[in-house]
Length: 338
Image (cartoon, rainbow, N blue to C red; front, side):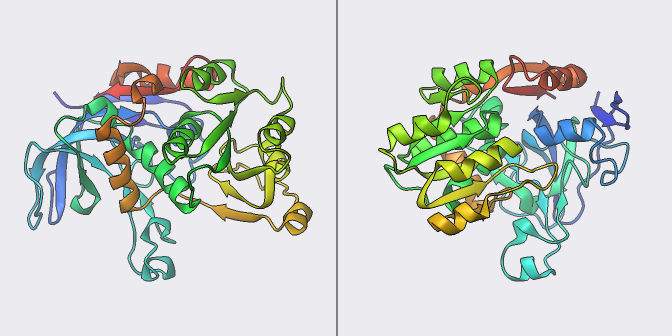
């Protein structure tokens, strides 16, 4: 029996029969194994993206699967292989695509948002989105490849070097993954987070973690850097407080990397940018090489991915997963076993 979870608006999730789609030219049908609940899924559940999504919507894009069927013209993959999906379908015609930046296509179709996603037993996708994963990599860890690819993209575009002093503002799933990838690249990392559970988890993972509501983060960073400031600050909180403090934390010509999606336009201290010749960089999703890097890190066991998985639940528990995420309590990443 196939199953799928459908978002129908007004915080309503309906669990029903799946509707498998036979793969057409250049497509592959996947049997989904595990899928993580993303912050974007939560925004959809809240109704914040109702103007964009087409209901009923099958959400989900942080996933692992095996190839079930291959459509005509698909080469390089075999039925039964373990894969993950880079869920981006660019138009290949806009200025960004023509410049080679398909991941930030002006007309980007994001699978699981603009098209059906992975909260279903069988998912048919363009074959060019597939990335093969090693046979020994667990399906649970593979379901973290997509958010890990975000972190790899962020770290790569920040040009991190061994010895860099890094501050990550926001210790949620993406923030912690950014911190882990930055540390793996040789950076010294401080994590700033206000959720006590996440502060403690960051410390368990070996990071210096600061709750800025209890300690002076700027003072701590200046102590660690002998008054110079951080080389790179990753803003992952999406808060005005984060936008305020990132400029205070940076050294002369330091780099602020905007990872979070802000609900409203934040105020930024441009005078500080002028005074210290600071740099600002936006980072969005990932490119194919970031997926490859994420797969390599996971396959090597280079990161403590088990520590990030708070719970594994059946697809029928999607709503309870959203509710637990809303409380911002004792969860980091919830996986659904499809």
